[in-house]
Length: 254
Image (cartoon, rainbow, N blue to C red):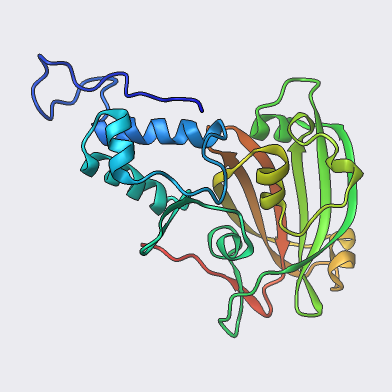
């Protein structure tokens, strides 16, 4: 097993609580160690972590420092605290993705995970927007997946997902599962940790409207997402064109 030790804390001559360039609180240094374990696969999805006391002893810090680092990772949905059972590495199961990454909710207010139907998958070169978003080289290829997502019987979302081809070898041979983030974690060792989204109102063109079974010019919500891995590397650029006649985008601000 790869070992990660705490390499430094505050200097002995540094005043307590002083803020200097490059200084991080001790619990954040411990958190960085834990993130490296997640990135390197030392702690795999679903795995139970050692106790807080064991981790504190191993790294050489207090149990309270370990607890604070674990609490922050749990708040970021990277770990799961289970009462009476311990702390586990989060998995990209449907429930987690439903509440963390899929924000469209039917107007009846009951969250549901959408069904998906792939309508196209192909490799090719990246356009300038894709290269910038995914931090690609000039000639680096991408894989594009297009699919329809539905809640119930009616199409709701037309998705275009662009991935750096090098990180998902063989994916173009299919099948492409509904839960892509679970596939990234289990098959490719890539955990999507967080995402950035931009929302904009648009009118559907004829091709887009045809896939969703509505008239050209129908208004839709366009969601552009860049999903990032644990180490901050871009994993996907996803554009979702969403019909909102019977659903809405729900953001729980805290």
